Amino acid sequence: MDTLANAINSIKVAETKGRPQARIRPASKVIKEVLLLLQREGYVGEFEVEDDGKSGVINLKLAGKIMSCGVIKPRYPVKKEDWKKFEERYLPSRDAGLLVATTPQGIMTHKEAKEKGVGGRLLCYVY
Image (cartoon, rainbow, N blue to C red):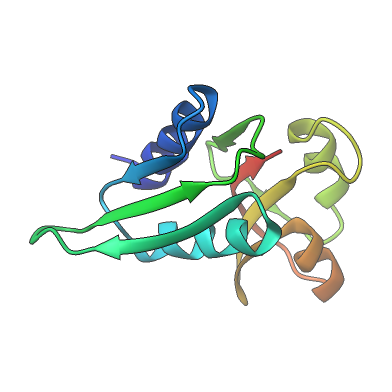
């Protein structure tokens, strides 16, 4: 069971149907970190974690700015020199969208990883 894939799919379905918010369950640390990153970049609005007695539910307000998003499987390892190759593969054009990756310095966008000169493993894309 891939909880990140379920969360990204819930966001994508809610965006395509024009809903103002999405409910994501279960809540996990990785999903929260990815949502904080997307919120910082302006793709989603605020969210709150609600304790339901099990694993939790995330109530997410959508900003209506996501045209497409998806999880990248398998989780390709990316060297610090190879970011451009994966940008061309998953993003529609230059300076449009984000690749989200997990790096030794935490979860960050491909732009931040290029600036810091680190590689990592791809998690998802958003544009």
